[in-house]
Image 1 (cartoon, one colour):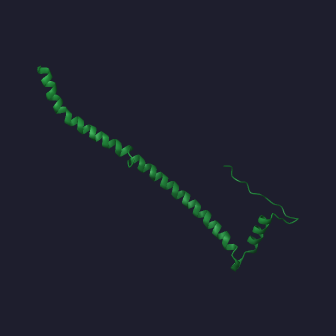
Image 2 (cartoon, one colour):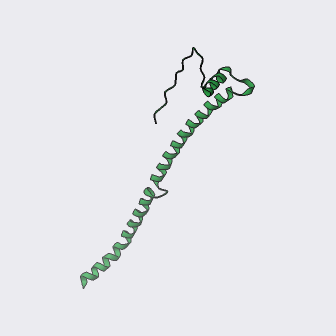
Image 3 (spheres, rainbow, N blue to C red):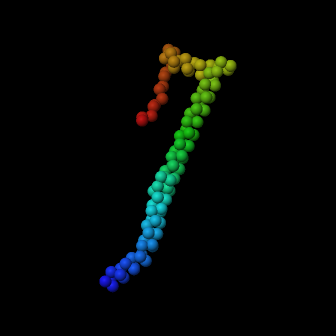
Length: 107
């Protein structure tokens, strides 16, 4: 009977620290792995940097297209650009001209 009483007394002293350690472990796990944890933060940071890189690429393409469109505006049309667009649209070439097609990237 004394052994059982001793076990009960010591178990009451251990329950508090075990509960505290369990609580700390729970919050530590969710700090790292949770929906708003460190891993999620790192993943979002990587996605933001990827999106910024894509935005820069799209902006460069847009500026290139804007420059080409500006050359075709009626106020100051560029004869070379007009000739290029007309030939590509109508699929026409001159009798002494050679057509060199650019290589397309394989996807």
